[in-house]
Length: 269
Image 1 (cartoon, rainbow, N blue to C red):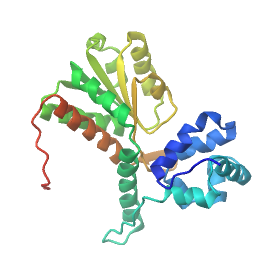
Image 2 (tube, rainbow, N blue to C red; image 1 turned 180 degrees about the vertical axis):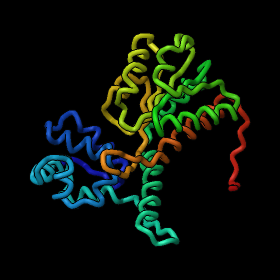
Image 3 (cartoon, rainbow, N blue to C red; image 1 turned 180 degrees about the horizontal axis):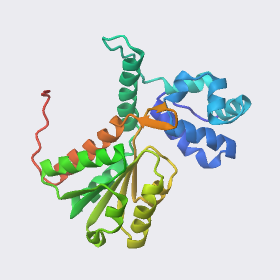
C-alpha cells in the first residue's frame, strides 16, 4: 500500500511522483487533478468521472492504486488545508471569488518547487535584461512584472504582440532571460515565440498552470501557478492571483539577491 499524505500539496506531489507508472486512463485523471486541484472538492464521483471523461469504476481504481481508501478519501486529502472564509456580504459570487483567490495563492505558494524557484531567481539575478511575454490577461501580468522592474531599477521590457517578440533583434543577446506567462502553456500566440526560444537557444522561465504543454517542454525553469476559473459559453476567465504571487516572489527575491534595498513593511493603503 502506498503512503498518502493528508496535506493536499503533498498529495499533489504524490500523484506527480507516480504519474509515469499510471495507465493511460489513470494519467487522464492525474492530469485533471494536477491542473484543477480544487475542483474535486465540489464534485461527487459521478460528476467528477463525467468531467474527466472516464467511468466511475476507473476513478475508484485510480484512488486505490494511489493508496487512497476511495473517492471520499481523495476529497478529504484535497480539502485538508482549505479554511472556511466567509465574506461579510452574503453572495455566491463574492464567496466564489473569495475562495478562488485564496485557493489560487495558497495552492501556488505551498506547491512551489523550491529548487525551480531558486534557479529562476539565479537566472533573473544574473540577467542583463528581463523580457516578459504573455497574451490577453497573461500579457497584463507581464505588464505588471515590467512595471515593478522599473520601480526596482531592473532592466526590463514587455512584449505585447507575437510579431514584436519574433522580430525583435536584441533577443539574440544571450544575457537575456525571458519570462513567459500562460495559463494553458499552449496556443497560436506561443508557436513562433517558442520556436525562436529553441532556435536561438534562449533562456526561458515559464509561469503557467499547465503541467504538460509546449511551454513546459521549452522552458529552462517551470513555475506553476494555480488558476481557478469561471466560464462563459466557450470563454474561460481565470483568477490570476497565483500568477501575481509568483511574479512578486520572483522580483522581491531577485531584488534581495541584487542588493536592492527594498523595505518590506506591514503598511496597507
